[in-house]
Amino acid sequence: MSKVRVYEIAKQLGLSNKELLNTLKEFDIEVKNHMSSLTDEEASIVTEYYAPSNGENNKEVVDTNKETMEIEDDNEDLDVISIPTNVTVKDLAERLGKQSSDIVKSLMLKGIMATANQEIDYETASSVALEFDFLTEEEEEKDIVDEFFAEEPDDEEDLVTRSPIVVVMGHVDHGKTSLLDAIRESNVTSREAGGITQHIGASVVTINDNDITFLDTPGHEAFTAMRLRGAMATDIAILVVAADDGVMPQTVEAINHAKAANVQIIVAINKIDKPGANQDRVKQELVEYGLVAEDWGGDTICVPVSAIEKTGLDQLLEMILLVSEMEELKANPNKKASGTIVEAQLDKGRGPVATVLIQNGTLKVGDAIIAGTSYGKIRAMIDDKGRRVKQAGPSTPVEILGLSEVPVAGDAFYTAKNEREARHVAEKVIRRDREKLIQNTPQKVTLDDLFSQ
Ligand code: GTP
Ligand code: MG
Image 1 (spheres, rainbow, N blue to C red):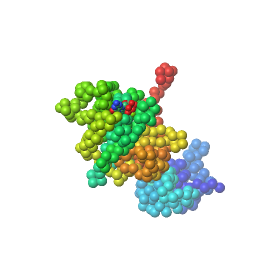
Image 2 (image 1 turned 90 degrees about the vertical axis):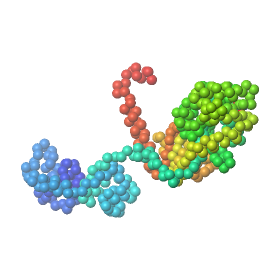
Image 3 (image 1 turned 90 degrees about the horizontal axis):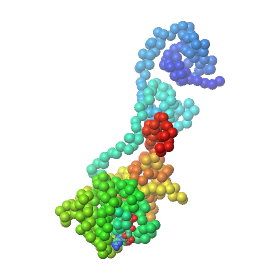
Image 4 (image 1 turned 60 degrees about the horizontal axis):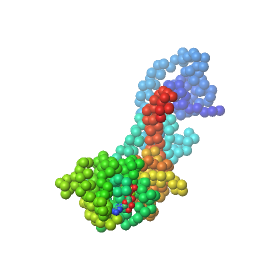
């Protein structure tokens, strides 16, 4: 014999519990309350009464009209609480003014095993609430995606000075990587395929106890998006212009990116050791793009350098530190990290690997992050020197492992409370993206539409 409870039938028939309880009384069916079970036979009596299978309403058999009116009034006395579509046992208990254990017990009686932190659906929550004499209404779902991404401003007192993030941009082969090699005394240029940079390399250089985070970018015209991403995440842009070549198309593009990102530009006039070098010509050409050198009466810092002969490097670094000091760069290391994905790829052995730049907060191994539709718990972090690290603070670039999919470079990343929240938000983002896609897709697709793509 299957069991069905009074409130379930009431719901099915669109009645209040009390209305149904009264009708049951009229039929001499003894029940204690809306949680009582009915036999199949008892259930069919009332069902037949309210929704007869022959299509006729037998309501005249018992006239409960008068009582129904009273009952509806009674119902208004029941407290109504609003609960979200998915609510944890603990949250429900709080809303009902009960202990979590009361809710767990009630669920157990329904054959549902749940712990305090477990989520239950609206229907279940509603039936539990009813047991405690509460009616429920579904709470309007807050946009958890918006809520999640809403940045809380930092308190002034939590802020500490952070090191500058500097992007190196310029035309192909003007010596960006060589300049960085000279500064960090490394030799990346020689290892690059065809001597061309194809990715954003991030590295931290320590100068007299001051750290500077450098992002190298490719100068080749094919990498416009990468240069733009580099500029967006940074505080200062070093515009490398070869003294023997002058301002070239990607130099102009870099200037525009830096301006769009509102990033201060420092010009490094490179290759001054070359016979054809002409610094004045470079300065002259830059004027056309709104960059007037200081010694020409403007406010653009221009430093002549040679990456090969390692000249002018100290002056360039000094200028970087000076400008960053003026910008008063601050961050709060005592909160969950957020920043930008600077690069990402799928590694055969390690899965999705991303280089992230932490712009605020501290990122730790074990943190759950979300970047666009990608999410996951950080399995390992590797710093720019190839060392495994457990945590990384503001202005630090690190390589991270553990994401569900390869994130899109340029996307922001945020830290969630835990992996479950990260997944939840990512799923909502995916759903929202999909809805947007559907909305933007023409309703009627013609053959022309298909072939014009
Ligand atoms: P992409 O990343 O491909 O845009 O190039 P890049 O700007 O990083 O240039 P890279 O450092 O690879 O240098 C290009 C060439 O210029 C190399 O052959 C370097 O040795 C040479 N070079 C770089 N700086 C100097 C310099 O100061 N003087 C001279 N003489 N050659 C330089
Ligand atoms: Mg390069």
